[in-house]
Image 1 (tube, rainbow, N blue to C red):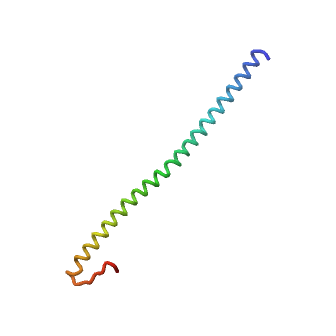
Image 2: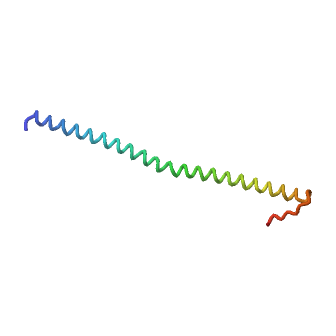
Image 3: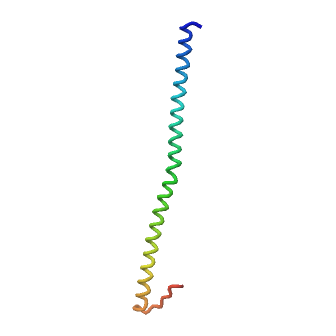
Length: 85
């Protein structure tokens, strides 16, 4: 094998390795995006659950205020109110 043939072979391998590296970089990037999506999904669920917990707490407080108001207002308007019913 002479120098010219060796150079052609070297250049061919170098080109192929560069192409493979580019394809690998693209696939690695896509895989990274998918992994980010996997990590982001539980974060979004946690945020939704946190919001739901806060809203449930606010609704529970509102229901308690309504019940207290009904208990105070019932005798004044002549209505029997049983909170356990």
